[in-house]
Each structure stands twice: as structure tokens, then as C-alpha cells.
Image (cartoon, rainbow, N blue to C red; front, side, top):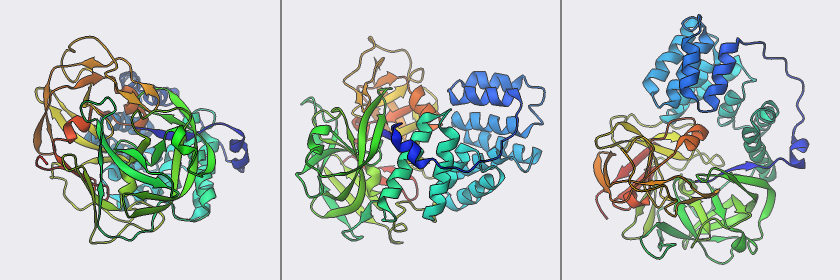
Amino acid sequence: MPRACASWSATLAGFIALTAIPCLGIQHDELLTARKLLQAGRLDEAERLILASPVRTADAGLIALQGEIRFRRADFDGAAAAFTAAIRADERCARAYWGLGRLELIQFHRNNARSLMSRAYGLDPRDPDIIRSYTDFATDPKSRETLLRNAIALTMNEDRQAAAASLNQLVMEKRLNGRPHGRLASGYRPYTVALKAYQPQGLNPAGLLAPVEINGGKTLWLVLDSGASGIVINPKPAKRLELDIVSETQITGLGGGAVGGSMGVARTVRVGADFLLENCAVEVLASAFAEGADGVIGMDAFEAFQIRLNGRARTLELMPFESGPPDVGTGRWIGYDRAENADQPSHAYGFRHFLLLKARVQGGKAGLFLVDTGSAVTSVARGNSGPPVGTPRSVNLNGAAGAVEGIFRISPLVLEVAGRTVGERDPVSMDLDEISRRQGVQISGILGYSVLRQSTVTINYRDGLVALGPRP
């Protein structure tokens, strides 16, 4: 599940040219300290500090921060109540509008989210979190450039990873110079792509491989990965691809560290016989990471379609929406709101390219599970699965940043997810705190290929739906 951010090099100096921005003003110590604890993932400490404050029931900033803690714990109803209470305490509380906007966005209510993010930005145009969220809804290139520059300048000292991500986005957009990223060049119509089993150890299938040609070169076999975004490839096959290199990058993933590499633009990316994209970002790692494959391709490359993955038949079906494709150049359904289908068991929550489903380990509590076709195994967060069986070991689970340490083999379990009951014979338990911190919400488990291959999986990025059909 890779994520890219630009490295800190001479590129940074060339893109930061901000005019002076007035000071934010001084906030009380409890709020500043509690926010730092939240950012570090120390939720209990942050909450205790807020509860000890004599102004916690009257201060809008502290009330909104309580909402952010509840959001982080995936208590979305509690978060909404706190953000609303913060606005009652101070109708100019920008973080409260931002929090409500996030709640709308993860439920694919994009129009409401856009209005709330615009309100938040109007109240506090110097908050880096608000700037980044507001940038997603800005379509004018000049406005996006200004917002990204501001985000870089405001975070470069305290959150270098976030600043680097904004820089990477800025560099890529300037290189494309108005050309739509990932433009569908082969027509908006149905496609079927024949896949291969991914078996890096030569035993049980660990996923599915898609045939991909970059810039008309040799066919690469990339893991179909709903836990990743874009295309990431190993260094050896990249040497022949004639990529237009844009910047250096760093990839972070389940391995916990970071791996250097570079980001380039591919003129064309062909998947299967006739699905063709133009102007696509491609990341190349400095060291190989996908054993038995040439790299990974995120399922969001096909987000303009309803996606059906059949592990038994080894096919990827792309079905157009009757309403047509998203706006050209955005790759997102910015102006489209999810239909009112909240009662459907397959309703997912969206965190950029991540889709999270409510699921429950039988005998345990419900939580949010990441739908991840690129993970060979199904995982549950430590403490959510009962006592471990055996001793910690890697279980051959590798992320883009290396081997994942401290994994426990646990007993078989049964999951209730998307209106179905599915069994997992060989699950693992692992620490998901870091990935939860990066995504800003508690992730209780990962639905890996070992579970997803038991069903025909349908993914709808437009409406935020993941359906597990009958066995293929």
C-alpha cells in the first residue's frame, strides 16, 4: 500500500515563493499540546488533557478537537455531534467546519463537503489541513498552485512528509501543464482484462497480476492493488520505459520505513489489449519490492468505471456508468454525490484511494477494515482478535518499505462484512497504529486477497460501494 511524497532537494527551493502571511495568533496551551498528541496517535493522552481543561465545554477549539479524536476512533456520529457543538460555541470555528466536511467527504457527499471546506478555508486560510482539503475541490490551475505553495510553506518545518506530498503534487501538475492526468484515450465503454495468478512463493495465490504496457514497451505484470494508488514499479523494468522523470520520491508503506525512488510521467499506459490511458504518473523505486511481479497498479486507475474482480475466472471487468465518466482531467467525481444508500451493507468510507468497510470479527467488536486486494493475507489489529497463537514472525508479508515486523499467526476466524459471513483459515494479527495515524482514522483490519478471492468483488469509487458477491 504505497504512498508517495517528494524528497527534500533543490526542487523545494524552486517552488516556494510565498508572500508574507499574517500570524495566526496565540492559542492556549491545552489546545496546542492536545493537537500534537493527536497527531502522534496518542489519543488517550490528548483526551485526558482536554477533559482536564476548565474551559473544555465552552472553548470551540477544544470541542472541535474532541470531534477530531472521535473521528480518529471512527466514532463518526460522536464526531459530528462535537463539531456541531463547536459551531454553536463559536460559529467562526474553522476546524469544526473542516471536520464536518471530512465527514461528508468520506461518505461521498461531495457537494456538501465542498461547501463546508470552502467555509473552513474562508475562516482560516492558513491552516495546512484545511488548505490541503480545499485544494482537492479547486479546479483552476493557478488557484491550485497557490494553495499547494501555501501548504508547502506552512508545513515544511513541522510536517516535512506532508509538505513533501504537496510539493510532489505541485511538481507533477506543473509538468503536465494543464494536460489531464490519466486521461482515458480508448473510449468510455466496457472492457475485460485477462489476469494471471500472483504466486510469488509458488504456493497459494497471493493476488492477481494485470498485463500493462508503459510507453509501448514490453508487457509488465503488475499486482492489482486496491490498497495502492497509481503505478509503482521495480527499478529493473523501468530502465526501458522512457519515462519523463519529474522528481525524486519516497514511498512509505506497511514496512514502516521509507524507500527512495523517482516519479515520472508516462505518455501511455495500456492495460490488457485495449484499455489505454495517457499522461500517467509512474513511480519507480530504487530497490525491488514486489517479488514475482514488476510492480503494482492501484485499482483507482479504473475509478471512472464500476470494477468487477473475479479471482476464480481471473478477469477484471470495467463497466461504464450510465451517467458517463467523471469530469475530464480530474479523475474524481467532484460534482457527483453518492446516492442515498446508507443502509446497504456494502457502503464504504473513502479516505482518498482507500475504501474501508465496516466489519466484525465474530465474538469481537465492529471496526473499519481496509479492502486491499494487494495484501496476500487478511489481518486484524492487535487486540481485536483474541490471544495470538505462536510467535511473532513476518509471515512473508512485505510492504513497499520492507518486511513488516511483529506479526502474530492467530487461530482461524469468521468475519461479518458487507452482508456476508466469510471464513479466514490463516489470518494474522499486526500493529495497524501507524497506518491508522497516516490515514487519520482507526483501521481495525485488512481484508486481504485471502478473503476477497472467495467472492466476486465489485468496487464503485463513484458511490463508495464494495460488494462481495457469491463465490466465483
